[in-house]
Amino acid sequence: MEKLTIEAKVENLPVVTEFISSSLEEKACSLKIIMQMELVIEEIFVNVASYAYRPDVGLVTVYKEFSENPAEITVTFVDGGVEYNPLEHKDPDINADIDKRNIGGLGIFLIKKNVDDIFYERKDGKNILTFKKSF
Image 1 (cartoon, rainbow, N blue to C red):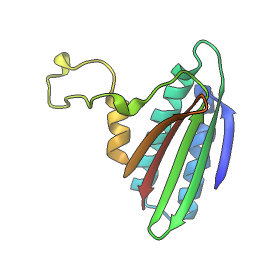
Image 2 (cartoon, rainbow, N blue to C red):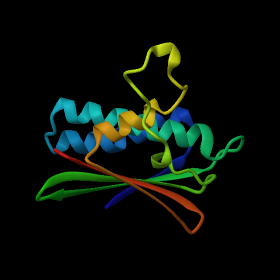
Image 3 (tube, rainbow, N blue to C red):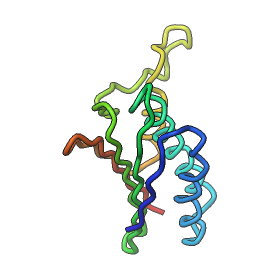
C-alpha cells in the first residue's frame, strides 16, 4: 500500500490525480477506467478541499493498493475534517426536469456509478472513504 499526504487544497488536485493515474497506466488499465478514476478522485478530493476544514486548510491522506486476483484498485481518503458521510445522501432523481431537481448530490451519484464498492466510516475523529474498482 502506498500513501500520499497533502494539504486539502483544490490546487493540489493534479498531484492526487497523478498519484492514482500513473499507477493505473503502469497496470495497463483502459483509458475508460483511468477516466472513471480521475472523475472519482476529483469529486472526492474537491469535496474534502472545499468543505472538510472550511475556512481552514487541513491534510488529506490518500492510500492506494492493488490486488491481482481480481485485478482491482482500492483507494482510501482519510481526513480530519468535520464528520461527513457522503453515502447517507439519497441519489438524485436524474429523470426529473432539470428545474425541479435539488441542487447538489450529483457528484456523489457519479462516484457511486463509477466504482464497484464504496464504504465510509468515522474513526478516531477521521472521515475514511474507501472505494474499489476492478479493471
